[in-house]
Image 1 (cartoon, rainbow, N blue to C red):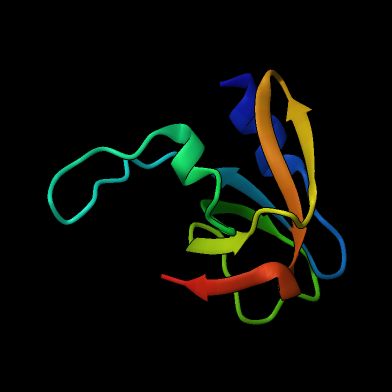
Image 2 (image 1 turned 30 degrees about the vertical axis):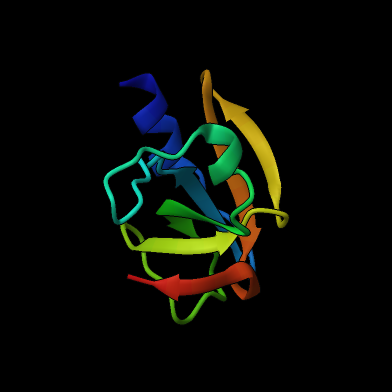
Length: 94
């Protein structure tokens, strides 16, 4: 509960976005589960937008997105790992 309160009161600036990574189970068409090493070769990660900066235009809070995994920086807020990216690092809004 404390973490949610801190996230609600946190406000990114400019074009920055706070994202919580969504960990997905990846299967091939034949039903085989891919290992985490296989998944790590993907360039993009799926995430949930928690907060957007005041100059972000095309992305809203609670959007599911795919973003460049090489972009941004990790932070730890109340033991929850979050990623800070810029709007330009988002490649798909679901």
